[in-house]
Image (tube, rainbow, N blue to C red):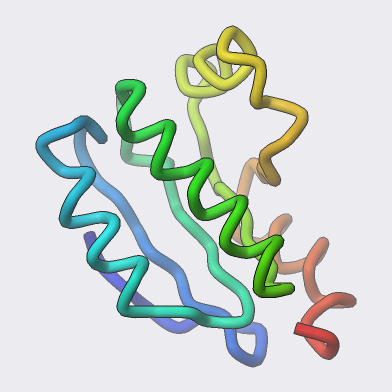
Length: 114
């Protein structure tokens, strides 16, 4: 997991690499709890697969951001991850973008109100 600043004011990017499973969920949750940016991008481009614990932690981001009026995007989810989101019934609930640039473009209008 690596944090970096994004192009938008208040944007932080958390890049994940490797399988996202129960063995990494606790580190992920600690990283998220320690950062509450107005705009959070979770880069999933290098995540080959995830389990239900990881999915639950992503849903936690969704709920937290809605509650605190923050914005987020899950970026670069593979077809395999999108299938998991679809089968579990959360695809339409989550904010997904194919690329970081696409997510930043979509959220740039919201950045001022974040």
